Length: 491
Image 1 (cartoon, rainbow, N blue to C red):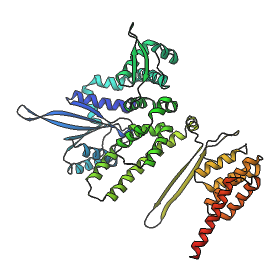
Image 2: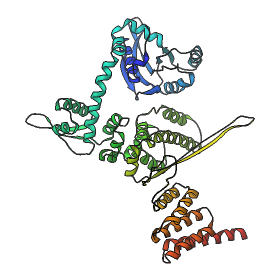
Image 3: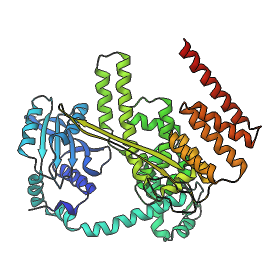
Image 4: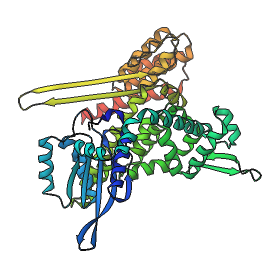
């Protein structure tokens, strides 16, 4: 029996593994983590094995479910899974994979096995085929009725997400009002609200006369938020959800601490503030923070605790894990920043520009192979003309050059800011705005240690307004910098 793995989703594959284990007599079956993608999902279960006579030995199994279609997993793909098994310390580590491992990978597993206190078993494509030949009902459920399952399940999920989105404004709503707002009959909404209640996501009071749900609202505790977020953060609702009163209230310091705890990270206060800003505007980064595989961080943390090193070295290693997490977030955030709906989210927080720097350097013993640096700047400032991603705004309103320049200063791009202020100085007619352009250009030059040029700019601003205190103060700073430099040279 040849299996067409393209007919089932990653979640289907995980559920199929679960059912096979159940049929084979495994008990206490529990999911660990969340599934999706080539990362797979873990199952912890146990089985009573014959020991002596009527005695049975309870064996603990850690099961890794991996749906691989294009190619079989390699040793490098399985490394994280082995590390996670080390942390869990089962009697048996079982890898259930929808492909056939190569001979080299089997040899690698055999070598690894010699160093481990637990047994490593693999359940591969041929094993699935033989099992499903004997269990045709299971084959029919997962491989022959896919179209029907796909037709009904998303519809139900879509209605549930609409119900949740109806409540994210933090108001209490009765079932009739929800029905009217999302355009679905009460008969479909009632069971969905019952499920949301059972998950702790929704609180509903009931009418004493007919026991119908009277007033419903979303719960704001972390467990409820995580359940709701798991349903919405990868859907078309994600940006609207992040801007909702419910999300704005719940994305707080407690959530940040929960995320850091989940990843076993000890982060400085500055990163906590940065993390809060990221998860407020990037649904993909928030989803990654809440639901991604955290095993590499847990394994690293446990390994670090066992090492006998100085506190300074421990802090340095802990800092590396924080940096790794930052890179994961940036990678996800970039995906959202390219989405057109993200502009509205950024606008809500008055974010008008951001900077991305990417670099890669590679060399061999003999020569440099590659040295590439790419820096893109995306401006989201409103203008009368079109704004192209990855390039500076060519403004049709001269005043806008001043705003763009200020954003560039905050991004640390001083030379580019000077260019914008030069354009403003050429085109702006309003004297109040013109003095700001001259002053800000002077600030850029002062930060670049070009004080004589900066003083000339402050003088131009003071010609327009002799009482301009900011320009007066900046001019004095320049004189102080020049004086301190000359004193250092004399010494």
